[in-house]
Every structure is written in structure tokens, then in C-alpha cells.
Length: 316
Image (cartoon, rainbow, N blue to C red; front, side, top):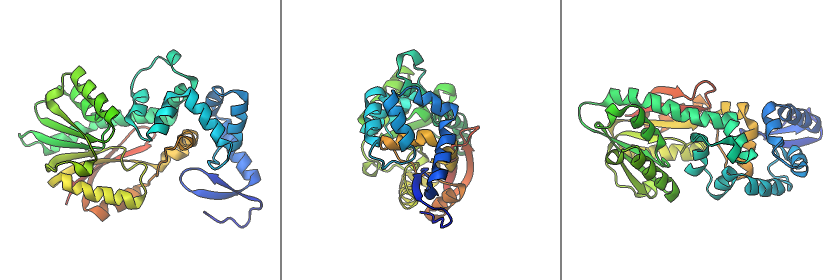
């Protein structure tokens, strides 16, 4: 916690990227500034009067006891919240963001998730992966079928989308998706069957630490580092070395601090349901790579807001 001795009546405020001590007057001003945004008004319109008042009081105070009432409301009125609470980071939650649901057939809270900046950028992250991965495949393709390991990939939508849009790669890659979530694996199997991609994909429902190593040409690690603190991120990236052949590539994503600055409201909703992010800077990403023997050779983003950084690195 940062100490600000010139402020009186300090109160803790959680913005997700750190804990700051503020005066009660400043807390009120910061809350009010966010509550006056169009996004906040849209969300609050989905709440009954009592929940709306409690949300105003509890905003950025995850330890406030009134949070329980807000959580109970969310779990009764949002499929997204129920999925996140049951399994933070579940691929099922992302399906709401990826698919074109009829807004008249989902709850107002779920419509908020869809319209939020954080929700929109998750979809743009998928688009960025779909459009940029082929560029890196061209860099490493030498006429022999490429082995791709998609680690903790959920259903593996990124590579599914690549092969949908760029069918020329179907004869050039073989993708293995590894995830511990049976629901995510089922979604992936359904998608590859729907798009006629069964020959390109295999699925393993297990911890990646239990998977057989096959020295892939490309390792994809999307969404895994986003909630992890630096020490664990470094540990995970070290373990990814085992999956790569010498000189192989990795594409790893991180949730950047731009997200918490742009959309603190959605971040707070995620916290209520138990999904915490560890937002990182470019310097953090550089530190992770330098500590784990991966040489950065490129990057791309979920334009235009750049909430997510996709780093391309080569095994030293």
C-alpha cells in the first residue's frame, strides 16, 4: 500500500493494479467520476434499486460485506457471472463474447459484459491472433508439417479461426490443444467437427504438466499468464521451454495495465465473482522473457486499445 501522509481519514481503494490510501473525499470523487460514465449507467440500469445503491457504496471495495448481496444478484441474473464464479477463466465465459448472441435473449448484465471495453477487446484479441499467427507460421515453415501445441487453450479458438480464414494452412499444421476443462475440450471438438478440421486437431483433457512432450515448432500460450503474478509467470514460461524444439517459437499473451485504466468497472465485476487479473507492463514482459531464456522477436496487440499484448519469442 502506498502511504500518502498528507491525506486525512485514509480509506483503502482497490483499482486492481495496486492498493492506494485515499482520503474519503477523494474516494467519493473517483467513484463518482466512474459512476457517471455511460458504461456505469448502462450497468446500473440492470440492477434493482437496493443492489444499485449497494454497488455504488461498494465500488472498488471488494472486502465490503455488502458485496455478498451484489454477488447473489449477479449469480441469479447473469450466465457470465455464474460461469466465472464456478470456474474463473473458463472458456465458457468467453463463448458469450465470441458468439453473436441476440441481445434480446440474454440478461441485461450479460449485455453489459458484451458491450464493455474489456469484453470487446477480448474479441479483438482473438481477431489479432487469427490475423497475425499466419505471418509467424510463414517464418518457420520449411515444407514439413508444423507441430503446434496450444497450452491451456480452452477450445483452441485461435488456431481454429486461423484455419477457417486461411485454409491453405490446413495441410501444413497439426495442432494439439491441452486443457483441464472438459467443457472447453467439448467446445473445441464441436467446432473442429463443424468446420471440417478434425484432421488438424487433437485434444487432451489434462494438466499440461502431464502431457507428453513432442518438441513443437510453435507453442501458443494465450490467457494463461493474465491472472498470474510475476513469479509464477516466470515459472510457467520456463516450463514452456520443454514443449518447444530448439529455436522454436512461442506466442504468449499478457493482460496489460491499459485494461484496468480503460475499464476498471468490468475489472471490479470480475473480482466480485472471483476472477482476478495480474496486469503487466512492457517491462514486466521483458523481465519474464529474460528470466526464462526466450528471445523476443515480435509483438502484436488487440488494436486499438491494446489491453492485450501478444509477444512472439524464440527459444534460445
